[in-house]
Amino acid sequence: MFLLEIFNLIAIFVFAISASLSAIKRKFDLFGIAFVAFITSVGGGTVRDVLLGKFPVGWMQDSTFSYIIIAGIIVSFLFTKYLSKLKKTFFWFDTIGIGVAAVLGTHKALEAGLSEPLCILFGVISAIFGGVIRDTLCNDIPLIFRKEIYATACLVGSILYLLLYKLGLNFYWTMPITMLTTISIRILSIKYKVRLPDLTYKLKGNPNV
Amino acid sequence: MFLLEIFNLIAIFVFAISASLSAIKRKFDLFGIAFVAFITSVGGGTVRDVLLGKFPVGWMQDSTFSYIIIAGIIVSFLFTKYLSKLKKTFFWFDTIGIGVAAVLGTHKALEAGLSEPLCILFGVISAIFGGVIRDTLCNDIPLIFRKEIYATACLVGSILYLLLYKLGLNFYWTMPITMLTTISIRILSIKYKVRLPDLTYKLKGNPNV
Amino acid sequence: MFLLEIFNLIAIFVFAISASLSAIKRKFDLFGIAFVAFITSVGGGTVRDVLLGKFPVGWMQDSTFSYIIIAGIIVSFLFTKYLSKLKKTFFWFDTIGIGVAAVLGTHKALEAGLSEPLCILFGVISAIFGGVIRDTLCNDIPLIFRKEIYATACLVGSILYLLLYKLGLNFYWTMPITMLTTISIRILSIKYKVRLPDLTYKLKGNPNV
Image 1 (tube, rainbow over the protein chains, first blue to last red):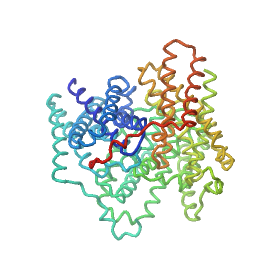
Image 2 (cartoon, rainbow over the protein chains, first blue to last red):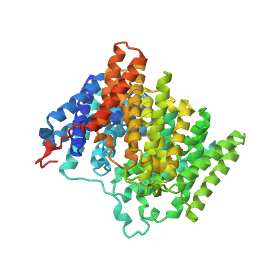
Image 3 (cartoon, one colour):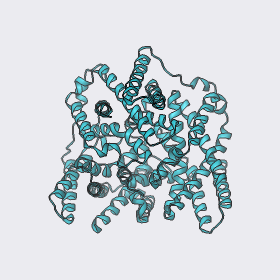
Image 4 (cartoon, rainbow over the protein chains, first blue to last red):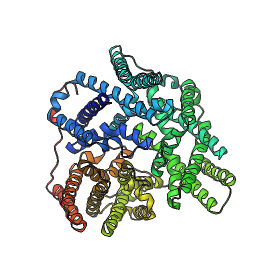
């Protein structure tokens, strides 16, 4: 599990930076930025652990998480201008982040003995809930609800991890395969501008809406 | 408790449909719709069970809940246009839903040995919290705070259930009586346009506000 | 701990009143006002206890909390006009409130054996999370993120409490010292209009933002 831990810390670090930049754009002060960064970084895992009844929740058992988040916030403060230009770099780290979080969430739910649909759900929740909390605090409609391939990539990654796990594959195989799949879906969907449809067209001319 | 289980599943099913329609109107994509539907359906019960320290929370112990929600989402996708015209049908199902949720929340709190005011509070929370989360995610001020007879009906139903329970009445009597009361209050308040007052008139001419 | 209990009840009472006034201004009806007041008053402590895995959460173990909140709501309803003029009075009570909540949160986290950075975080969360939930429900960007000395005062109070605790000082000394420090920082920062900077100036002329 050592490799997963490393990737998990990378994911938390990058989530902290992306949340900080989001808060800076909204003119939050230094404390507000730090608070939003913290909640975004640990939010998904916290909801996951609370629902599983695992206390204390993951990030509270190991100070490393707190230090990594603080490091992410400090980096955001120092290199605000530089980092906000690196959109592609973020896209990559962020994609790695959700890939790891989806795998970790699915894995923890499997270990807790949950049913298959719940394991998949936990993978997706772990990956996206932090961002949902961040956008809600920033008074936006969560982006995830409209930029759907983000979440759909997590969904596919989570389902694939479950299938490979059931087939009895070793963790050192399932993790890279699942992560690469999630990352590839996200990259290809951005490159070819693939989007899930919305259904508003069905409501046209309906006076009750 | 078999009857209550059936009604509970109906409530979850209808909450999933109403949340889906709400998300479709806001141009969420397919995934966003499914996510909002899921959270709205299980939100009230999740908050209730987490506060009571009951883990895993209710909907995670039984896959039936997940399947019912998925069924509700699929129905919403397939019959969007048709369902959005059935305002009266929804009103009825939704009213049945909050009636059952209020009774179930009060009942679970009584079983957990909470004090009377907390049992009433848990009834109301179970009935309305899903909707509050839904509206917050959709970036609205929760409707419940302004269409108050909705919540007031839950409050009366919850208090009545507590009273009948303390009188020692059998569950098969208390449930239909409480539910019918909640439903009647909601229907009559809509029919006669009864609303609780707001207090803004008290603030007129106050320079500090 | 008796003194702390008294201050805690005062804090909850005042949080209930300030939240009620906030909801009245937004034209919430009577029920909406009561609901927002309740969540604001118990929100910080609930998040704290859930994260610590302490069930049932604090306010559910003792009906006194519920009665104090109900009293606060009734006072708000009866004296809306009068109270909304007493801005300075509120400022004082509110400042006492966050001071106590920061100390209590830090103390409970220390008792639960958490690491130092987490104890400080719990102090801040206990003090401000109720207000964050309130502002999110009211569809605002949480004020706390832009009026930062509020939260920074909690942060300093929480750190100071931790230091004095580690030095082995008696609770009857650490509490008043910590509270007075928190209160003084808040008052002086308002008086001399001290604010933490935001970082938007770093983003000027950046086409990616």
